[in-house]
View 1 (cartoon, rainbow, N blue to C red):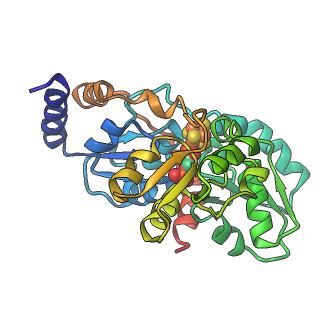
View 2: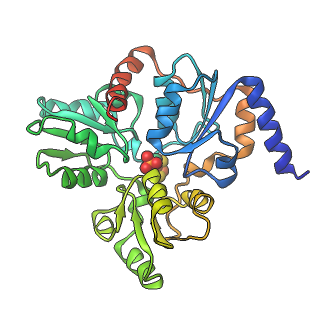
View 3: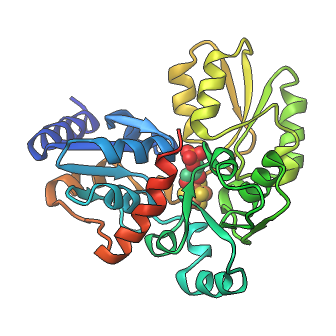
Length: 305
Ligand code: 13P
Ligand code: SF4
């Protein structure tokens, strides 16, 4: 038996012993995705975290995701195998700056991308993910001014899709998706002229414009599974290729650029998952007052089907 097989077996044994569930985002390393009980996008992972009856949640993702899991399931132990796996976009808005901005827009409804800290969520009215952002905004009264934090690309995409002109977007962005340029996509299209272009809304607007389909990670997977198309250019983080290959055998997927790697998503390794289960650390918690306020923001999102 290889070292990796031994490690996987040990993780499975500990998982049972701890009554744990392993949740993984689709941007994780392939071997991490493969030991997970569930692999999904941010919205699906939040829903799983809210409904699981496991005692322990091992979150293979980034810090704000583990925080959301704890906010939704405070009676569970939530483990983040690498405590330094953060999200640079989430760090682009903090509670102090948001409070200040809110004072200049007292009538605005504040919509936050789930890629935010618990403190920021606590100051917002409703959360969204890339899978439901348009639906969330459309659920708000048409004449209400909206402050959308922190992703300017997702915010501008939602404004366009919803036809709303009263959305103010924060100046944040995802470093990984922002690296992808229009020229990268045009070059990929020239190389693979028959391929359909799948774009995540965290990408720059000029990249989004080149898309055949704009979708969250799960949206892209579902589209590729159902499509008659055989070739796809993928404009999101490379970890998703593992799921494309598993779910769509016989179809070809080309990453639009080798730059599409999120270093934080790659911090989680099998060794760290093993250590987390063995030592029951690092645990992610949120102070109760902040949790209660952030929970309202997440619950309003989860109520939208
Ligand atoms: P989704 O899987 O919800 O599309 O999230 C993208 C992302 O960047 C998560 O950090
Ligand atoms: Fe954050 Fe972007 Fe990495 Fe997602 S891919 S965790 S948004 S930096």
